[in-house]
Image 1 (cartoon, rainbow, N blue to C red):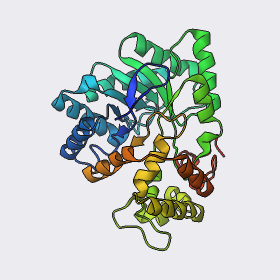
Image 2: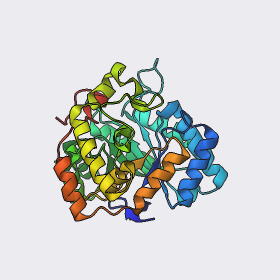
Image 3: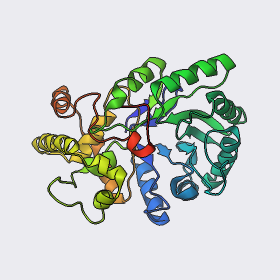
Length: 335
């Protein structure tokens, strides 16, 4: 396993991060424990979850797994705050001090730990000043409940603004950003990744397999498998926006490249993301042990300069064929 610096922190994390979103939801607790144990045995030391995943169940299962295997101290444990945790309470969401402090305590209980290694703001929120958010996070760091702080789906300008505010107020700054990044949506290459490399931020891409579109299971001329995420895409506006002819043009091109190499598309696409300049650790989100084993094989694939040139002819740098920003979250700063 290769280990990489998490931004400027000096902490080293595995080249793949185990995403725990499925645990406690579609993946049973017992299967989740087994997947976590196998990932750690393979050398993964970076686990990522969030309070909103199955409304806390993912954190509970992740925490129980680490308690059972006794390997919490070996793990860089990340979780997030921002999303709605109670439909009938407007204060149980967002980036306010009240919500951040309250949800940190709740996450610590669910994870059965006394500290969170990386606490991330799950989404930006324009109606709450960034200093409100940073002051709350800084207090958690000073109290020893959080080690480092990060963001997810922030724009480059929002992060630079946060750096300025942290410097002005003498607060801890964000050390990493978690954006969507895959062969179907490469917009982060325009500004976000150059900014991150300039300021020493880690980049932890989510959806490196484009929600499954880059696994080889889908074909534009055939209906999706009945148990697949895109099985009901015709009734799901979000998935409809990703099921595009442009996306399948890229998928067809990548399929030709992977067949020539004799490797699985999922492994090739994941290896490409992990080996892109500025990337720290892509997040894999296996639902089954089989999917985890497939993801781990990406570590054995080397993307050559010739591969990169061929890929860039199929998937244009900086371009988008299937949206992984605004399709999820409404109007956004990426166009």
